[in-house]
Image 1 (cartoon, rainbow, N blue to C red):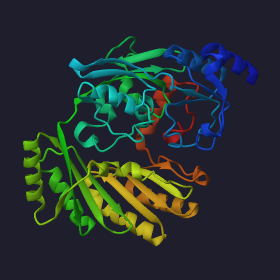
Image 2 (cartoon, rainbow, N blue to C red; image 1 turned 90 degrees about the vertical axis):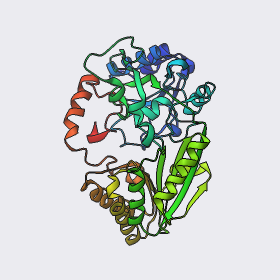
Image 3 (cartoon, one colour; image 1 turned 60 degrees about the horizontal axis):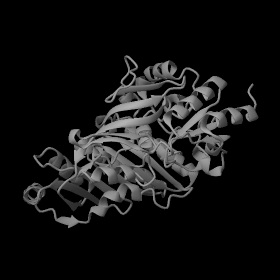
Length: 420
């Protein structure tokens, strides 16, 4: 058994004394406090530190900006946090080809500023852009309002480099240095919560920034009417970029539609939207409404539960009504923001026991119709409640991939679906 002092000395020799420190309460991962935090200066240092940890039997938790460290289940053990904070460069922006290569520790906001200089963007609007990093949003598969038009991160990433537990820096997709035959690493690593390897860099396809944008909002008297309106818009010839529904315990539901086009194009889209909705009042509103999803995280306390849901658009009304029934019967406060793709965020407020029962009941209802509910944040006393729910028949395949790439279960043990 290697001593703590020997571990410290070996890690210092790899990343440097100045880049290794003892963990503090702010480094807690779902209630588990690691021993050390290392911040390598480059991907080779990171790969070497990971290889040492793997050989020594040290459990590693990858970390970017630290904005989503309470997502997933508590790790079975967590001894070393490997941070990508210093891997924060934009390595190559080939603006003529609409691609960018960026290190995993680069924040979304920093990347946006660079791309905007050439009138381009990564068409992704994740949470906390000033702190969230490229590696973090990929590992958690975060997605926002732009997903409907431009797809999820799996649709935008075209290449990735991973530090594997054996110390290999493996690349796949665009800008390939070394390939791992048979694996689509960009898609495998997106949403894997850092359980297969640590993302060190990624290559994305880009899109032009819009010339002009407008956001319109409308309300509905009940959720069935709202569902009909949303499906009507989705089945129309409207070229909307985003469409979200907001609903809360007040019982009122509103929907927001984002258009991006020229002035003439926007005028035509607005006219078509008003024709589709008939007598329903449509208002032009500020763009700030698209921060509604992030607003659900504001002022979260130990009585707050936040969960990501995925449902079929045809099940919106039934899901909303079930949420209202569960929340009202347990005297919970609740809010909901759902994209027209069926992916949304639910916020519940109440006591831990009540929150746990409500989450289980809502998950059962959603899963019975082929959907899912993943708990992203809950009070510490609820960490025993599984974050993921039923993963179906995909778990055996995921376990097989995990055994192939991380046979010692070094990375984030127990945090992912099925205790992976």
